[in-house]
Length: 206
Image 1 (cartoon, helix red, strand yellow):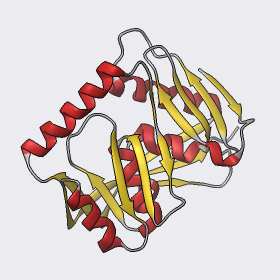
Image 2 (cartoon, one colour; image 1 turned 45 degrees about the vertical axis):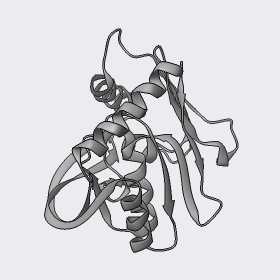
Image 3 (cartoon, one colour; image 1 turned 30 degrees about the horizontal axis):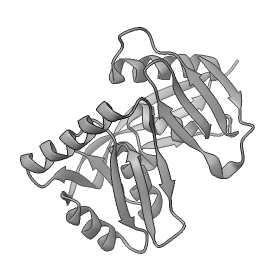
């Protein structure tokens, strides 16, 4: 694991997942932890004292480790490197669930991703939000949830059971338009209420 303050322009944040190295480039620790914990913006609370600089992180996973294993290990290693403490708490909240409209839709999206893996040596996401749409290619559902929560200030959960990286074109104008765009792409969005996990991140006292 290598962690350093970024030397890149602020607008160039990205990440990539290679077979031998994972990179998070020019991203704040909140964004990185959101992806690693599957805890989008409204589910993760950073307290005062946590490092605020954008970071460059290079991580070499243990041999033959899968995605869930590398995420768990990297959270632990990052917490140690940056002197952080992460706590979980259950809270009753209203939120939206995202699912696939059908099993056929889910399988079709997974097949699309598997074909991408066969033809690409390294996956790299691309984001464009300069228009009235959030256009994203090769991104995880976690990142979609993060965009929706940041834009509309309501909690979302991904329950599609999709493992992979996909393309999206989602409205930034209002919540109902965003839900309509997701519906058009084969997803279903429903409002519900239940207890959810909220993560609190603070700096350890010396």
